[in-house]
Picture 1 (cartoon, rainbow, N blue to C red):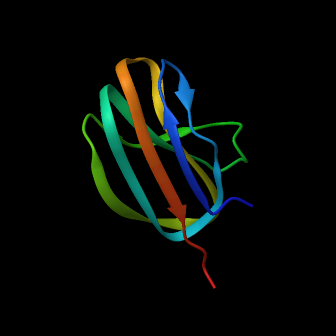
Picture 2 (tube, rainbow, N blue to C red):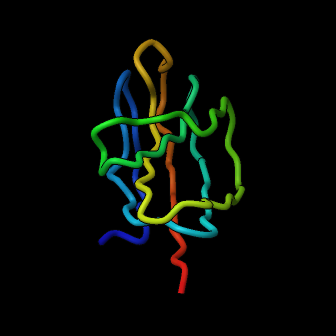
Length: 97
């Protein structure tokens, strides 16, 4: 299981590694010098299907609450949404105890 992903991403249709089994609170941050739209996505079927959670066009520090259990998360540039640079992203997943 991966609890934290810290990764640089650049390029159209490029995504981070997956943070798996998130349930509860999670931290999410984007930094770096980049132009485009970064999308945070989640999957309920171990990465077969991805659904958009949020999108950003600037650096951000935030958190979220995942009401489900065993949900997978990733971030990146969808096709046609990357212009230039590298985004440095981080997702740290929480666990229900």
